[in-house]
Amino acid sequence: MSGLFHLLLALLCAPLLLGVVNRTKALFAGRAGAPLLQPYFDLLKLLQKGAVYSRTTSWVFRAGPLVSLASTAAALTLLPLGGLPALLAFPGDLVLFAGLLGLGRFFTMAAALDTGSAFEGMGASREAWYSVLAEPALLLALAAMAKRSGQLSLSGLYAGLSLETLLAPGGPALLLAAAALALVFLAENSRIPFDDPNTHLELTMVHEVMALDHGGPDLAFIQYGAALKFWALGTLLTGILLPLREASPSLDALAGLCGLLLLAVAVGVVESVIARLRLTKVSDLLASATALAVLALMLARRAP
Image 1 (cartoon, rainbow, N blue to C red):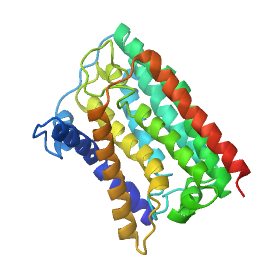
Image 2: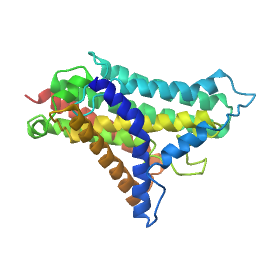
Image 3: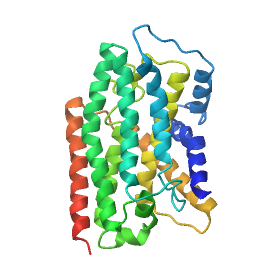
Image 4: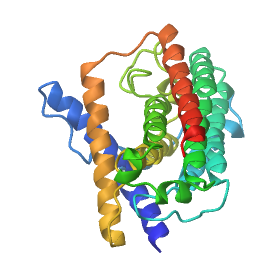
């Protein structure tokens, strides 16, 4: 039941994190900003509209948003939140977690290519290049944590984490893995410095350009899937940096939610104080994430 509670909490509260990010950026800019619940209003508005499909598209274009949303929701069933266990847990589920995220990305890129648009093809190409650099960092960071804990399940990896483990001899490996996951988190969610989710220039878009031809419920599925992905990867990061374990499932859920809200505030601060990197520099930053993950794995192997 605790694992099911985490899944329901994620499905309900994931769009709230995007509202916190936007509100934080508005405060830094001196504006009142949109309401915290604006992402929910946007989703409801899109769900009430109809979808328009080009005659040049096939079933791939229609399946893209659905598969992307379903795969991200399925990945959430493998994630623990604080002291709350995952709904599904088995040895090797960390590989399935990365595979489900990759499946959603593949169908998103395929749907963009199915339109025949040059702009969406450009965005799909950039997304593929980002994933080539980000996925090794994600897997190597999880491998370092698996080596440190001796577990091959995400629930097992995070169940043994505490503030004491960060101060133990293997703590630096966990911190390096967290640094790598932080960069992957920003890249996978199309946040600054890798991408600007608020840009309207097709030549500079990455993720948003792949959704230009989607509208109505399909666009709602894409935006909701992006919120769930923000929650999923944020849970991986906050589980290391804020390994809070309380006595009751309700307190564990509250602690995990507070950690994700703090992460959303941090993302808003980052996007308010730094600019987006040039495309030629993005690959260097993602390569550094892989280097941090490799170093974390090496330290985990040497730790007692």
